[in-house]
Length: 193
Image (cartoon, one colour):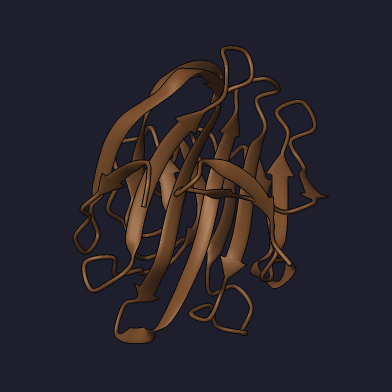
């Protein structure tokens, strides 16, 4: 697979450059932690597996919860990140590929977070959700500022394979959008079925 591979253990993170200045959490960020448990953060806590409700002051804050749960990329699957595009329209993508749930290696998920330089949008895309339980409020999805009290939340009942959501900086509300997934082999976008 292409991109920058992160060899993540259980409840760990890798940190890397976004490749541009991204306007989130009241100040631009240029580096981010990609966490094994399905979230991105600029905060101190990059290893939390006990997903709290969205918009909660408990750490981690300054975070983008793509599909926060207890994932085990140390067992199988891959986590990568990659920045593509030209200045002004670059996209940072972090992807968790076939990552199993903790304690259930046969239940896996593939999902992405995409940060858009041009408009400041945060996009979450879901390709495979075999490891996501049907029950509500099992995973945490959304974005929180440094206090954990401002941001936007998406119900885990509103995600499915082939679904993407964008959180726009001005609107601060999730918006459904056509799903485009970055192919890490070719670095091209493709639409999921």
